[in-house]
Length: 78
Image 1 (tube, rainbow, N blue to C red):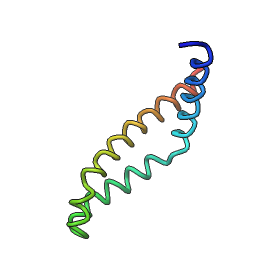
Image 2 (cartoon, helix red, strand yellow):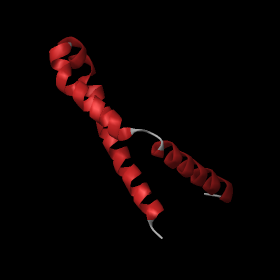
Image 3 (cartoon, rainbow, N blue to C red):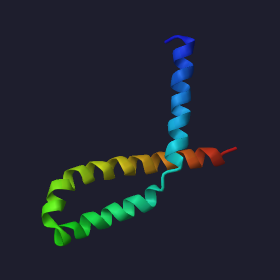
């Protein structure tokens, strides 16, 4: 990796970090979990069709929430 590539990757990491910090993940996770809970009763067909995708999105959101928490913790460290 040359210096230009290194700087490009570093900038992408900083950009992704800033973007993730702005996502209201707690609220999203709560809403998605509620949708997953009531979905089978409200619209079983739609829930069946979208459940696998929702599960995957929730897994990613939870990982990102952990990332948010770490970044927030590190930003408060001296």
